[in-house]
Figure 1 (cartoon, rainbow, N blue to C red):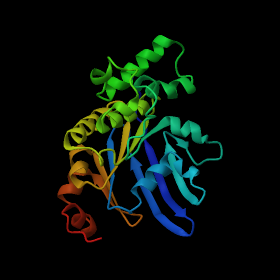
Figure 2: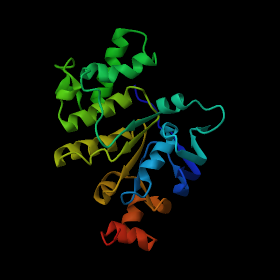
Figure 3: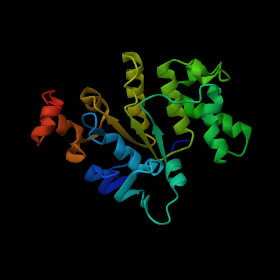
Length: 257
């Protein structure tokens, strides 16, 4: 049931909130089927870049976007682009797990495919829900209680449920915004293992301020500081031979905000 990952090209991206420019001409080339991490201190613009990729910034009246974001050849800010189609192609997992707490585990995963008519039968939907929960390392823990309200799950389980919900839409890429920042070490380890496996079926763009996490799971890393791209490259190079002094200060914990 897997999908192939998307390539993502970001070209001279600029984002304003009102009069304040928060992304200042960022260009990134994200290969398909990798874990690409956007790393930087709080307030550097990392999450804004994610929201620009799948046009969530459209939901902020004060936001203005310039530049291009191209996903598998589709210019998502082009005149003919459909924002809803873009969001179906690119899933999103937020910092705080946000399942619908009163809705069952099953229905949280099934809701998107139902609304978007991705399946033709109940069996097809059952198979899709199971596949998504298995991919999110959650099936074995919940298979006997799929009717349980999602709010009854632990924080780590809720985050994996949100990942399953995103996967059920068969996206070509998934964006993760600090997905482990509210989890304990065990929950964090599970999500990190999941992230490294997901690149087999799609492209993962991860935002984190945690340099250790970035070094553990990433194939490529971009370091963002004050809305600007400071350095980008294979994670092995960024963490062992950074070219920019700001990058080195950040990854060694010597940066003073």
